[in-house]
Image (tube, rainbow, N blue to C red; front, side):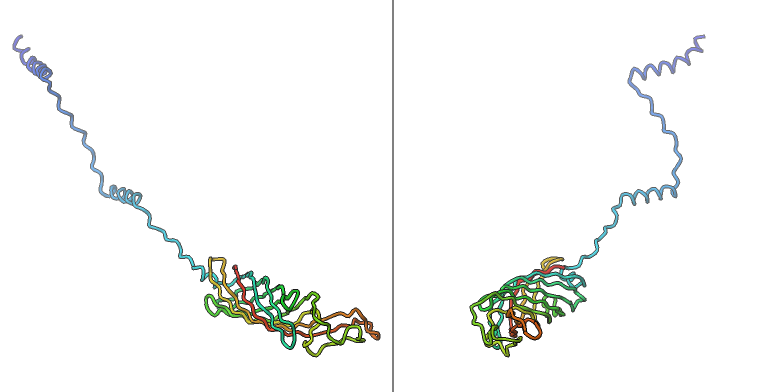
Length: 261
């Protein structure tokens, strides 16, 4: 009986000795895993690389310069302030003018525009009243900044009473309308319209995609038909008796202009 129990005591004693000495059991081996197939791992790595990689940069489209934008066809508007003079020919009074101008039109292409101008000036120092004009102007763009225009239209003068002497024949002596042969002796006041023309050179500097500013030098001519009502009627036709006098002028002005497109 003692011989059968001896083999059983040996492992028990060994376990007790191990506990007393602080021995630790060996860790269990991890269970075997099935190896991943190479074709399945490759797409996963490729997808991870695409997600982590930065997208290619997107460059914005190149923007046009402000000067190039002014070459495009379209509507144009300009406001200005002009100062100049009107030189009378053949006796017509000479004077100085100052006032605003408005110009509008269409840019047709890179070289040509069609514009129209309206001018409303105060006349002084010889003339006394208002000088106005309206012209249509084909305009050539010689360079990016310089333009040359030729204009034709109407012009007029509305004058107040002045100290000029009244030429003969006097209104009280007329039985019919009378036209003076010249303006050597101008009538006291001129009220009338006529033909006007101009030549203009303008230099504009672009200050933004929508605006430009510069100077304009203008040479003009005007032929005004002054009409003076005598407050009398012709005895035969009962029409108004008037005196007429033609005033030719040559003018020049310098204007500061701001333009928009």
